[in-house]
Length: 127
Image: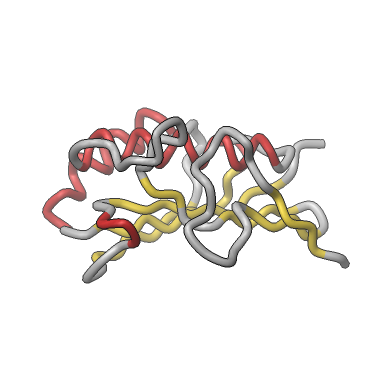
């Protein structure tokens, strides 16, 4: 199977040498999405706003790949501070449709661009 790079025009530009997502067969694997506003390239203010923006960016990347939030099978959530997890978890539960995908959440020392949360996903493509 060949891999195909995906670029979403309505998500923030990649901050390095990577694709927004890669499609292989009937699956799409996204890069982590930060809470960066694609219109001005700046991080949203605070963990709640960054979580919402990161999920909106993830949605844009999935849709550019021919997938969607309802197609996610696994996410990984990276948080700068595990004490933020309850707020991130609440918003995640509101913005990711059921049935909820499998998920991991880990606290990390730092995230790119000074982010407070980053979310990546694996999803199926729409038929």
